[in-house]
Amino acid sequence: MARIPPDFSFETAALARGATCIAGVDEVGRGPLAGPVTAAAVILDPARIPPGLGDSKALSSAKRDLLYPQILALARVSVAHASVEEIDALNILRASHLAMERAVEGLGADPAVPDHCLIDGNLLPSGLRGRAEAIVKGDARSLSIAAASIVAKVVRDRLMVDLAQQHPGYGWEVNAGYPTKAHLEALLNLGVTPWHRRSFRPVHNILYQDKSVTP
Image (tube, one colour):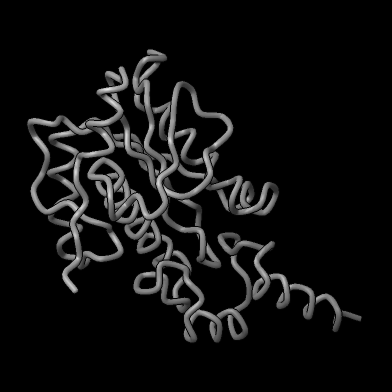
């Protein structure tokens, strides 16, 4: 069955309801054991939408890398993070929403920029300004959210490559901090880094075991 690409229908409907500036918002990095959670907010120009936008998870790394500079050149873009410390203090859902809120705030100081947000998922961040709607699987349905998913994915993946150079052995350059077999084995053999999320069970268990055998 052919995959139906995202379109501009959610944006068009919001414009018909009176919105004037619409941002698609998505995050990446809820599942990894290491690294921040990263969100992007993107305001597309309806007349200059890069061709080939789609859910970042369905695109190859090469395709995402090709689309990324096009999105930056043709759209208004903001990227933000929530730190490992914030993830551990707040929980991953709230930290993800915090990153989204920061990304939207980064689009501009004018409260009308944007005046409507399309949020990937089934919950709205509580700190968003203006109107917003949650769209389940939004990265596969809305072009604005798809653009945000690509930007967030590329930015976070590149960040994890940089962190992998500082902390070799965990495979972050290929697993982006997700709990692959190699990453879990490295956790056991190399220990926990400052970039690991201590509230996540595999990391927590290692720390707890370490403390339990300490005399």
